[in-house]
Image 1 (cartoon, rainbow, N blue to C red):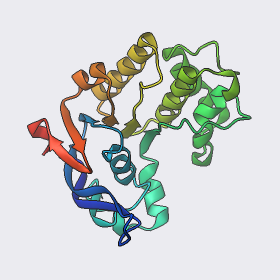
Image 2 (cartoon, rainbow, N blue to C red):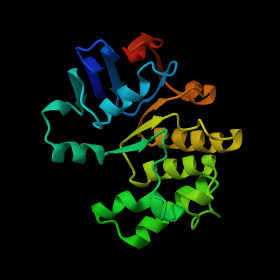
Image 3 (spheres, rainbow, N blue to C red):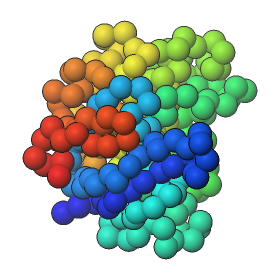
Length: 228
């Protein structure tokens, strides 16, 4: 069963001008519920743009994105927000809040959902310990290395217990041991039925995936039959 689907999706910037950029051009893709899918390709190939569209963070220039059978383009902003709350996002830019300790950075998105502070802290501790950050709960972003910030961002994406995880290079700033911890956690989530879509160059994460596709110049070059 397809959970996410792109049909003839295009995303153009500066459309109609001499400087027009076709970030995505006629993309078709189905992501099955419970699958672990990886997207590869060079920088500028459209991976990040595609993840943003599938995550209801942006809208296509043309084409249709479906989530759980619903056309995202027909939803109100309030409905799109509710869709995003079913997802977790790992961004290349960590987007941590400077004044908050690490554990609160992990869980502040849960505040609007009414999750109690004690439960927020429990989730943060559990995830940060799993990711090798048990001694960094009170550290602020400026006190963390790039790899530690990345792992805080991973924990934040998982704290909301998402149905879908959309990850943009989730292991790119990590040393091999930390990357293994993140991949092990992703495997565990996948085993629980979480749908995972990750843009990555990490061969270990690519090897874990059931489905893989490569992007080149805003188009999908098929690798796996399941990516059709």
